[in-house]
Amino acid sequence: MERTLILFKPDAVQRRLSGRLLTRLEDKGLKIVGLKMLRVTKELSAKHYAEHVTKPFYPLLEEFITSGPVVALVAEGPQAVAVVRGMMGPTNGAQAAPGTIRGDFGVSRQMNLMHGSDSVEAATKEIAVYFKPEELISYESTLAGWVCAADEAK
Ligand code: UDP
Ligand code: MG
Image (cartoon, rainbow, N blue to C red):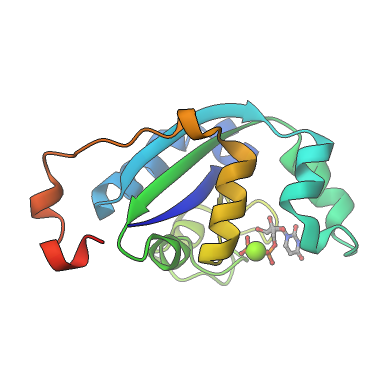
């Protein structure tokens, strides 16, 4: 079963949207297997956004992502990486369609509420950056049999 790394960014936490974002993930049928609040340091920001550190928008992105607490989660489910990217919508909230998280809750290119890993490889790396193995909780959900068929749950 696929896992993906999600962050509720400082704008989501400050706007008190964490509960509503978590509800959307749970409503979708994703299983939460890791969850914590933390403060992203400059070092962690540079690691997390390694592909962006040389870009012109990086200084403001660093300022934003380190400006307040984030909620980090690991969600599990069939095609979890693509499912979460689809739920978030494109980067810029002003262009994201209604119905997506970024489309429903924001109008910003930077303050777009949520991060989700963009590939299975990135998810594996990002999960290891944010969570120790013992912080990820494997458990049987009693709803599992009503979320997808047995041949999809792999
Ligand atoms: N970002 C920004 N300005 C830009 C592009 C991106 O501040 O012009 C921020 C935004 O918060 C985005 C993050 O940098 O979510 C990472 O950018 P990426 O293009 O990887 O977007 P994502 O994968 O989050 O949709
Ligand atoms: Mg990205």
